Structures are given as C-alpha cells and as structure tokens.
Length: 126
Image (cartoon, rainbow, N blue to C red; front, side, top):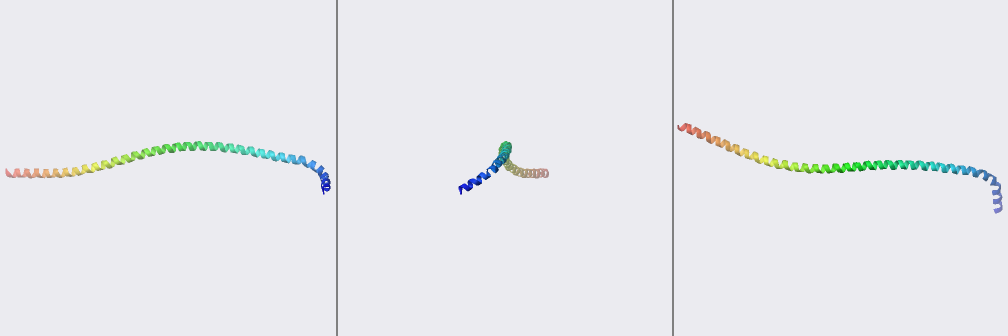
C-alpha cells in the first residue's frame, strides 16, 4: 500500500510544483484582503471611538446643564413655597382687616344714627 501511494505521489509531484506558486499567490491575496479588511475595521473603530468621545462629552455637558437646572428648579420651588406662605398669611390678615372694617362701619352708622337722633332731639326741644 505504501509503495502505491508513494508512486502516485511521485506522479503528482510535477502538478504539485505548479500548484504551489498558485496556492502561495492565493494565500497572499487572502492575507492582503484580510489586512485591508483589518485596516478598514481599525479605521472604522477609531472613527467610532472618536464619535463616542464626542457623545460622551456632549452628555457630560447635558448632565451639567441638567444639574444646574435642577438646582435652579429646587431654588425656585423653595421661593414659590415661601411666597405661597406669605400670600396665605396676607390673606388671613386681609380677612381680619375686612372684619374690622365691617365692625367699624357698623359703629360709624350707629354713631351717625345716635348723632342724628341727638340733633333731632335738640332741634325738637328748642
């Protein structure tokens, strides 16, 4: 069996010698294509890294602005709360003043009525 295989291998030797340069060119072209593909992928990855860096920077800026807006909003909320409390206190004082005005108006009408009655009595007695 070995001698037959060896004989067949010797018969194929001239064909193998012609195939080796073709195989070498084939593998070189494949490695060149793989190298070109790897280079293109590296360039694309570099571009993506750059884009991700820009996105990260813009997100950092947005986060800063969002934090600033949150602080301003919390300050505004505290101011609104204190303003609401002042308005409620002013409403209570205004209601008390309106009540005092009603009482004073009633007293004024009572005094005017008593003064008019007194003036009538003085006029009638003379």
